[in-house]
Length: 150
Image 1: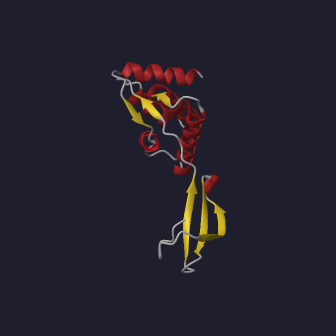
Image 2: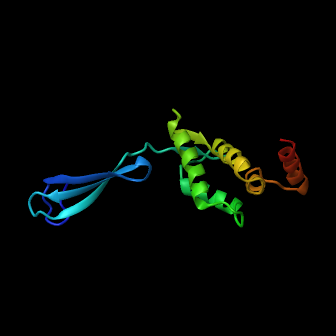
Image 3: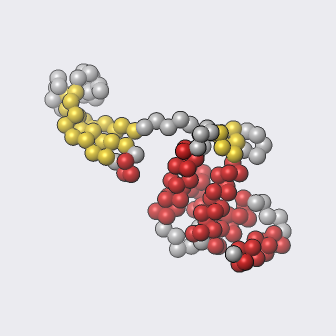
């Protein structure tokens, strides 16, 4: 690892700590040439996932899009952000564990719907109205009836 102060290649690891959820390792290093210390982070590189949209386009998976959609659905609901983050992390982990590197947007939407239904029924209906593209009030009432019958 190159020293950011003098540019030399030789350094030693003085201390290592695991980051949040073991997602990365924080290493404190000391340059063997100038003896200054600096911090590095080591993280596993994920192979990119691609989302196949309804119109056939492909775009790189972006967890922030899921977070924004869930936040919109959960607006003014008593749901902590940490719970939303947990849902998105579980979905992301599940997607990366699949063998395919291309995932249909519908599959991701269905995963979000399932988790929102368990989390908060109002948020679920809000998300469903956008995701399923409700055009009429009858579609809302049909979804609410299905929810009440469960």
